[in-house]
Length: 324
Image (cartoon, rainbow, N blue to C red):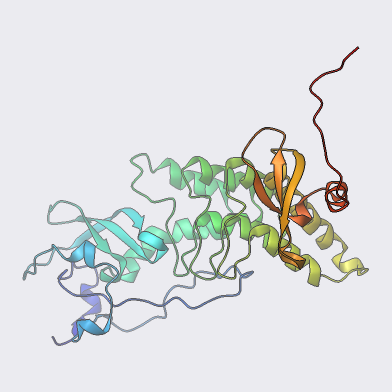
């Protein structure tokens, strides 16, 4: 099939939905870089390509478009009235209101003119990247029908929550969480969550807030690091004895403390039963005082006196009462 070129003057027209969409690859970004949304590079015409050899690419939106019949009709776009992120944060679809009165329908972002998408999305992303609580609140207040997806993603698969978390805005985090934001969403530029962003950008208040809201501190990024691992990694490379870095080290220590409290505050060890592994992989099988299931725990998370006693062969007995 020959490539189809759409004149810029027709950029708001509904396009024949039979066209196939190529898979997009997302490049890896620095795990501690909030990438501004510059949008796509300008071009002189809006172009859609119908791929001749469909076997060379996998279509991420095939399920969305496979049942739509090809026809010769085109309807003019009135406006976007809703949005939703694709599975895995690999793109967006928008609910289009048509001027010809047809029933609103979901259309992949690649089939919609960039100026139309920008008109709908720019206020949202501007507010998120500035951590503007007032602007976000205003947009959400106009979303009574919940057609706007609070988990909308940018080109890197990042949601508004990731940006406001990295910027340290507790009010914005609360606002988005109450609106239904996915607290454990991983982006496509490193697998970072909101907790990773808050930990990496040294925002202990947001770390504590997210953990309290139910964010999972054990989710790992693409390098296999939890938010706690990331904070410790940054602390290790932050110079000691440098007055310029003193506040940063204090902040990182606070982040680490908040995450460790979230991970290990719920149960107290009664005794150590077994051990396995060596070095950094050394673990102990612990029995909890709250009678929850025995669990293998890294040595660094167990009190040193308990480890010493276990290694020395001391045994513990639990008193059941006092006699006499």
